[in-house]
Image 1 (tube, rainbow, N blue to C red):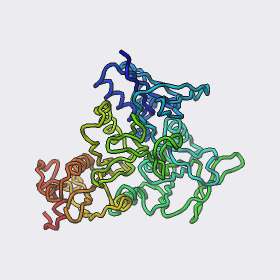
Image 2: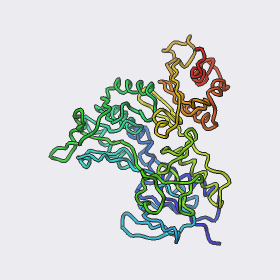
Image 3: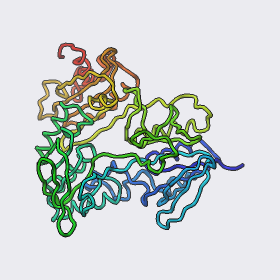
Length: 458
């Protein structure tokens, strides 16, 4: 009996999880995974830990080693770029990027997890030496080398999202003077509401970071050796021995144009079963618009946690003509440390809600972690919670927590509450433990929800 041929494009989280699920659930399958890059498979979300010397080795910062999944029966091909799909013949064209040779491979099922690429700002000088991107193993090792170079004194980070802030922190810890530049009005403004970004902004400045917002980068100026020396903006110039660009991402889908249905920005369109317009071709991951449970619509949610859930769903329903259930969607939860502060966020905030046209109300709550009789210096820091909810029903649509104490696990509680479509009233009386070594008589999220409902302060 011939084996069912499954081809997977992309060796990051989606490719990895697909192999784990398929080999666990099915027999008599032939899995081939193609990855255009050389290294299988660098975990860019672990780059800051590598830059700060907090990992065993750069070669360990990966989702999986090829030999580990090959033991499960899959074939892994690095330096092999899938360049075309022929849906009539059910083949893909694959180019060996080292030799340039092309070969066609048959498939019965095709899973696209092609991911995203970082934006290179379209400004003069973006091809200068020492203008780097913050993604992938090659860039990680180059940045690491510059952080250890004593002649590199001034680093400019372009982009104040997660990746940019990680680059800032690693650079400061390496003893560099760091300038953070963004066109929006506040660091992490796409992820947190203003009450929390105000705290983060002050923390960055307290750590010596020059924070420059609401500006446009006009060019990177170089010297006679073709090395960047200055970042020029519409409101001033900034000395730079190294520029790290972390100014967003774009879907890696140019090769799919004219074959797979894409939206105007290049995101892959899928139906409620994660199927593309082509039969037996599925798409998951950062290049796909994910169905957001709180927003009740599709939107970009580029998170490893999202693609792994999508891969799990596809594997479970891959051989059903019409899947028994639709993909239920995701909330989108994430966390980050910014020097002494730690935050977690889930669902929508004022920025993302506006982008997808969802009306929300928000509430911001500040308190201490433990009862008032525990002094701050004995482990009772300030804690902050923001909640977003649907005005009419009070259904939770978003939330975030922030503190110098690590309360990021509360972000998972918020995510679960949104996944289960709980309301403020549900959260206000949810049954959480109390022990004064950890929490208050009402738990933090209870209190935040009670505050949002206008109840007297406990």
